[in-house]
Amino acid sequence: MKNGVHTFRGSKHFRLNDVAEGVYAAIAIPGTGSLGNAAIVDLGDTTLVVDTFTTIQAAAEHLTGSPASYVINTHWHSDHTCGNQVFTPTAQIISTSITREIMDNFVRKRLAQQLEKPELIYQAIDDLEVKIQQETDKKLRMEMEWDNASDRQCMDMLPDLVYSVPTLTFDQHMTIHGSQRTVKLITYGGGHTQSDAFVYIPEGEIALMGDLVLSKHHPVMAYANPQQWLTILDEVEKLGVKTIYPGMGKYVH
Image: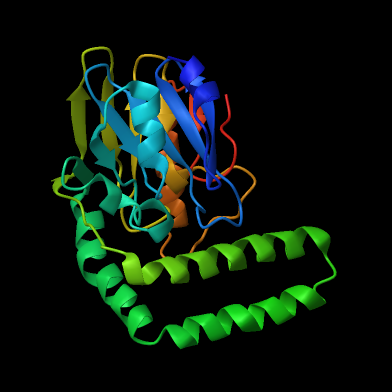
């Protein structure tokens, strides 16, 4: 199965890496519209996708030989959820109850506002482009270019978006048993957002953390609870995790 990573023809949005046997990292390529990472887990008789962006579906089926039956949204941010539509109606979209409520109300309304007056967003993107040209710090300028390019691609995609909210929710944990491996969906509350979940794979002691863990990226703190975030990470540490896969950036052993 690992050879599938090397034979997958690829995507401009992400690159594929092995995390472990049956677990694959879809690492976002900056500036392509896919800000957040995704992951693919081969359960044996079915496939689980963790967080979504558009072409992850093709990679999932190529690697595992079967379409995804389950998609987990670790939190409500659009870079982890806007690809949901490519998996419906065949896959169950899963999140915490709070995440679904936010997506179905706050996010849906915000997307409608953006569709109603897209010129305001495009103007902000154009204004930032001017600031980028004036920025002298090379690292900061590169990050600004990535973000602005992703924002522009997301706005270009918006008219075709069928916003798809989760169809199955949980409040503390959920276990999915496949024929080859089992995954546990866990939430300890909200840290990065009002409600954050992660995927724990006991076999291999792997945690797919969403944006609770970032690699060389500064977290968005607008809806964060820093103290609770630290508490969540303490609880994750008690699981004895050996491999952590972040919501943004490269994964860390």
